[in-house]
Image (cartoon, rainbow, N blue to C red; front, top):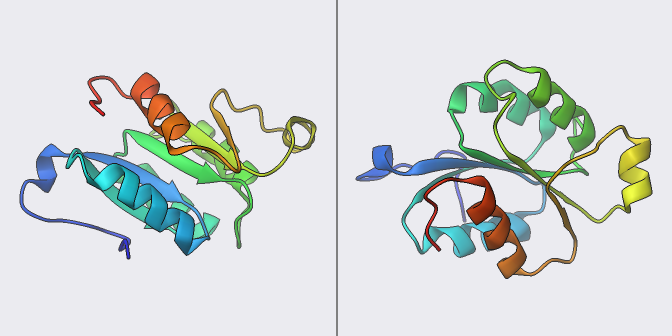
Length: 136
């Protein structure tokens, strides 16, 4: 299972992805999909509060954010990260089972939205589009 902070030899050369998701199975799937390349250092957060406390100082190049989270919902976290000087421009992929009208009602208008269920290819394509020099 993916730990909250994952380090190892050469980790300083890898880029960071913050995954904010309360479903352990999805975190493991993201980890399996991204770990094979050796390019990423993955940090998992299981609730919105811990993510808000730690992500701004993490220096992540990408955030994968679920909308339905305990302690602080993903829509509120998204807005707070967008308002923070350290994460204002960090690409965020929003993962949700909600419909577009529900997201609009929450005030969340993400440019990069991954609807559940999604294919791993769709996620990798989004990462490739958002992170310069990413090689699949």
